[in-house]
Length: 390
Image (cartoon, rainbow, N blue to C red; front, side, top):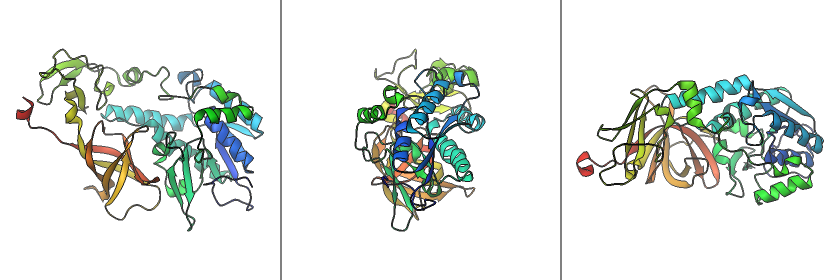
């Protein structure tokens, strides 16, 4: 059989897997489904309807939650020659992704809804339903690689082409989910143009469709406007590290740690240098700003750790990625428990890093292998004493 590395190794008849291909309507998921079918698997395509009113999500070719996208996915399935269905997961998506996104911002944190969607929708709700219906695996167009060890266990690794790697947003998957995950594009050492060329050779009309960007459920890309609609506006103060008022805002949720632009401060810094958002306090609706060097984070504590296999037994040395398109940084990390006995992760950076915000995900790597992920709860910063700032 013309298979690819990392395919699940539990076919029903020893040669074929029953595969449910999640088809967003984009080029990557279409090519992934086509490759799975070409490899000889019994593939069924499914498009996830994630909005009760699709027009409230992105329109045109910019997202993955529109009526146009479902039509594009159906046409791709027809060309590949596989059955196709639309599954309504709108209520689950609203509860687990959209409502969570709003609640996190209301609490002064900066969430990543793509990780939440992978964890709760594509590899929980979708996978559970697929397994209940007798499928062996869920196939997506993510750029990542699943490696099967000699003992049969499975590991998540970076894509062969690290420029396209998406393992960061898959760091929430546990070993059970990896056992039923298929990423046919993960070992592709090709450019996106070559993926598009492959789609064109296969007769897939999505070959020239633009990639989706930003957050799929924010129709116009205006995150601050979306949050204001859901949370309302609330005037508050922008202050410096000593509590001096420098300006005002219409809602602390409109700011993120490390933000420089859009502060609209009436008082310039004494040294004339730009100010950056250092802290967001939802309790008193205050945004604290200061110099760039005050963003230096030396350590953090993260909650809700999820391990792609067995959790580490103790402290270890890894590299960490802190955002979807960020680089790696050396860290020492150790699983621990808080005062209530809940698991957490404590991380110390070899060198200070900037732009780290509560709510973001930290993903640990051992070489190319994804060890696990957790949600940043608190950070420790290297601050200068007040006298040194004056």
